[in-house]
Amino acid sequence: MGIPRVKLPADARPDTLAVREGLPPSQYGENSESIYLTSSFVHPDAATAARRFANEEDAFVYSRFSNPTVTMMERRLAAMEGTSGCIGTASGMASILMLVLGLLKAGDHVVCSQSVFGSTVKLFQDFAKFGIETSFVSQTDVAQWQAAMRPNTKLLFAETPSNPLTEVCDVRALAHIAHAGGGEARALLAVDNCFCSPALQQPVKLGADLIIHSGTKYLDGQGRVIAGAVCGPEELIETKFVPVMRSAGMSLSPFNAWVVLKGLETLSIRMQAQSARALALAQWLETQPAVERVFYPGLPSHPQHTLAMVQQNGSGGAVVSFIVKGGREGAFATIDATRICSITANLGDTKTTITHPASTSHGRLSEPQRQAAGIVQGLIRVAVGLDDVEDIKADLLNGLSQLA
Image 1: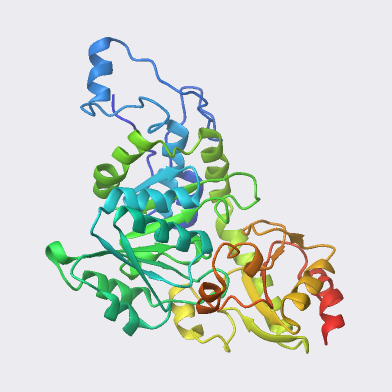
Image 2: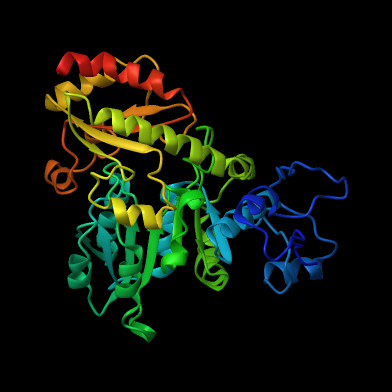
């Protein structure tokens, strides 16, 4: 048997793909996709089972590496990102682990933005003990990326906008640097698209080779499950990453895949609404006496505002970070005075969340590493949800008014 596809027009647009792509319904004709909560699949005879386990026949075999619900999510996300392939993983960090295990070996070199998520920094650092060295460079200085390249550089890794300072890298420029060697010298560019999601940004259209996702964030959209994914060329997914999944098993559960699958259906409208609220909040924060600086790509004051508007479909996204007076004490006072915002390091939820990055998402980094990434003690990150933005302003003002 082959695994069938949904019959859709070849020119179906992203919003249609977000609610239709996946697998055809079963013989029962369900309109909402089914959840296949099964660990294994029954084969008609031993010979067929042998062919399927040997990859000689396309079929679902074992849910560690093949499951209908996970496949539906993978196909839908790939269609939205504009890639031919996708593999779901147990978490966003598992997707980066998958990337490294599938592509790199001892003696290889990585160039990575120093502004990426704190756990991403730690993971790349940890791979040094396996002989994979990483050079960390400025997110926005293309010359630093170019200077860091070596003959053994195999991967460039960027996160744009970055977490939490919303720094925007030039994806086209980094793709050019990665691919300039050609042939065996050609490196791959992987872009973490967590903050924008394919609703606002499709990095492959800018030259990226692979897209990393924490489905835990905007793809789910309601803070319900942990999930991740790598999107890219189907051949690369099948030859480099599926074998790792079969052996290592950082598998995405069918239930979590189904939650993300349904979250993708509302991704576009959520991102539009949350981004609009974030812009209004960022503009208001710039007027507050207790706020020293606001980081939001949608503001003209953002250093990469023009680039962000080009890469992110004219949107700044839904994450706003800002520095308050009084350092750590001032940041804690502002956070603790809130009554609506959820004090949690997660983001992408319909509920607005607030956190102190230096002691949470980047707490495992050393102070010099945090300083290099711009994570100062007075920094606060707000991931704007679907709450009324006037209520969020009032919530923040409870603490900010005490610092002015």
